[in-house]
Length: 266
Ligand code: KIV
Ligand code: NA
Image 1 (cartoon, rainbow, N blue to C red):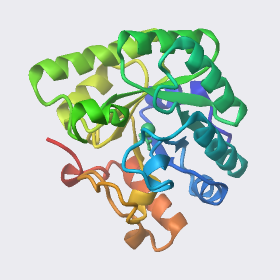
Image 2 (image 1 turned 60 degrees about the vertical axis):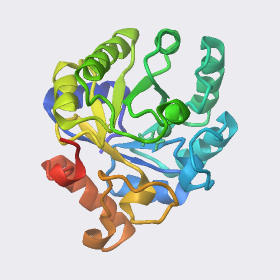
Image 3 (image 1 turned 90 degrees about the horizontal axis):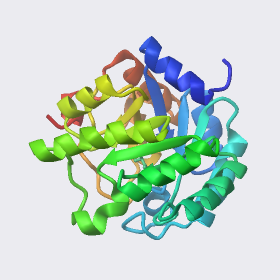
């Protein structure tokens, strides 16, 4: 199969083909993820928790993310590589452009950033105008953990749901190519996905998103030291091997059997 491109993601949404994404932090797993036919790979700042052992993503630096992006890029031949802009690397347009340039030069094809505050929309516009593909991330945004007071489902109340729907519109208008929705009630994620011109990728956001993402360590059942949320499923048991687990996850997403109600928020 041909390597994934950014325009092919939009085409997949138009065709109703589900996008399958996993996080990854090194070349060995990247080779396996690629061989399993996973479409998108995320060097998430979750690396602060599952690789570095911190209890949040805040300590991760651009240098850390660039290092893991270089490692993962060497292992991929087909999946599209997305890298997270770490905490405050998107605090200004200048910082975001410098960090994104470093991540694209490390091998990423797209950068991801959290939130839709006015300065974040400026950053999305700034990057998109400079030919840097952007993935937005709304709902539970782990870089906001100190102000949120914990990792909780977002958009439960009507006013919060309305704001989330508006934010989804705003990031697409600003030029984002993809939108991650984390810990959002199923009906809200469904409504955002229906309206969104760009593909949505859910994690704890129900089965109606255009694609799904999980943290690699979680779907392999590793005790990575962080919270084990409701939406996590261990695919190693049914998959029988690491590559088998990835293939079982991809099959479940493409056939619509994951996530089910037990792995979603009503
Ligand atoms: O850092 C990460 O792994 C993420 C995913 C959970 C979407 O942002
Ligand atoms: Na992240």
